[in-house]
Length: 242
Image (cartoon, helix red, strand yellow):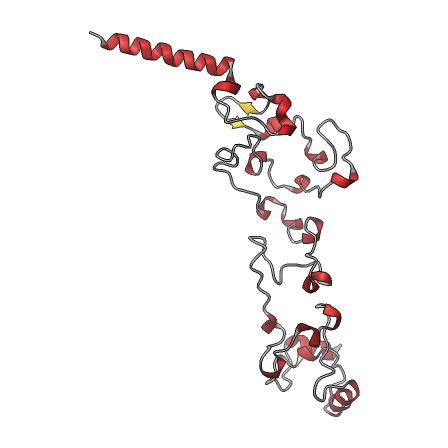
C-alpha cells in the first residue's frame, strides 16, 4: 500500500533537483569556480555548455577567434609583446578546445578523462619546426645545435634524449674522448679529426692524394670507426664524384 507514495516522493524529489539544476546550475552541478579569465561567466553555464553535450568548441570560438588566439585578446585588442606566445592554434587539425583546456581548476575535474596536448594535433607540415614553439636549452650542448631536434628528441617526450653517435662515428678505444676534442667551441654541427696523432691537414692531404682521393674534407664519409680503414659508403662515393 505504501509503494505508490514512495514513487510519488521519489518523482517529486527528482523533479525538484532537476528544477534547481536549471535555476541554479552554478550551485547544483558546477564542479567548481571558473578560472579568473572566465570568472565573468560564472552562473552562465550555457555560454560554454550545450545541453547533454557539455562544453563544446563551437561556443568557445564565439569569443576566441581561432585566427587571433595568441595574438589578440577575446575583445580583439592586440596582446602586449611581452605576453605574446607562439600562435599555433591556427595550425591545429581540429577545433577541440577541451582536449587541452579545462575552465574549472578543481584538480579532480580539470582535464578529467581528456588527453593533454599532443603534437599530432598539429598539421603535419609544422610538426618538425620545433624552434617556432620551443627555445633551445641554455646548455653548451644545445648552444650551437641546429634547429632540427629529431636526431635526439621525439615529439612523444623531450626526455630521455637518444642521440646515436655510432650512426656517424663509433666512439671506442682511443676515440672515447670529450666532445670538445672533435667539436671545437662546442659547435656540434661541425667536427674535425686534425690535432690528434698524425692527423694534420698537410699530412692527410698528401696521403690521400697519393691514394687518388682528392675529396677528403669529410673524414667520416669513409672512416666510421677506429677500425675502419677507409671503406666509403654511398654518400662518400657521391661526394668524391662531385
